[in-house]
Length: 196
Image (cartoon, rainbow, N blue to C red; front, side, top):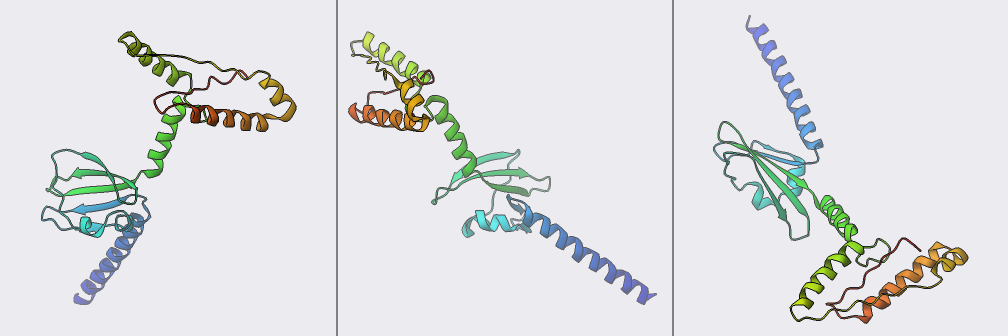
C-alpha cells in the first residue's frame, strides 16, 4: 500500500514538474513581460521578457493593487517606450504586463506626420497649410501681417516625361529644401502636389 502511494506521489510530482516546465516555456515565449505579485508583495511569477523590460530595482518593487485595471506608459532612458498594465487579483495581488511599444509609437507618429506632410519633400501639405493660413489670417485681423507666395514649377511634367520620375523627385526635393532654407522658422513652405 505504501509502495503504491509512493509511486502515485512520484508520478504526480513528475506531472507537476512537466506541467510547470510547460507553463514556464509558454510564459517565456510571450512577447510581453509578465510579473505577478501576491498580496504579501512576493513575486511568484516573472517571465524572461519581464527580466529584459523591467530594470532590476523595479522588478522587486511592490506595486499596489488598484481596484480596477490601470494603464501607463513609461519612457526609459534609452528611449524605449513601455506600456504597463496592472490588473488586480481577487486575493489582493496583481498581475502587471510590460509591452515594448516603441515601434508602434514610431509608426503612429509617422502616420500622424504623413497625414499633414508631403511624403516626398516632408513639407506641410494642403491640410496643414490651410490650418496655418487660417491662423495667420486670424492674426492679421488683429494687427499682424500675413502674406502668401505661390510658386509653380513650369514645365515640370516635361522633366518627369523626359528624364523620369526619379529625376523629377530629386528636383522637387531640392526646390523644397531651397524654399525651406530661404524663410524664417515662423514661416511655412507647403507643397500642393499631385497634379504634376
